[in-house]
View (tube, rainbow, N blue to C red):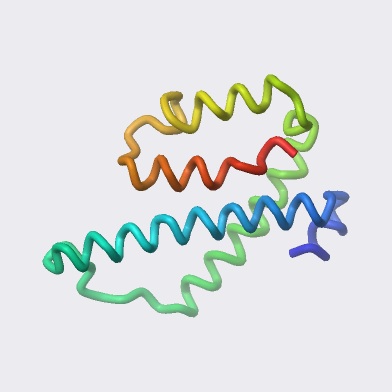
Length: 116
């Protein structure tokens, strides 16, 4: 991912931080769902998805995210505007609408390094 970022003109270190936040957000959701399913096993999925299919999807999403990072690089520069917009959006704005507490927490985690 760092090589792909550099090839697209992105800073590899800040891009890595962004993806680290996405992984951390995913872990927030995974741990939360596992706790829910442990507390109420009837709500757990009955089938596990294929890890090969998941890897293929993640690779495609990674490429899409890298393209979006390139396209939004100018508006993600450190500024009070970027940080203020994300602070409001992560909890109460349109981005967070309809999310439960678990997914709002994951969204906060995922947005930590968007304004680089």
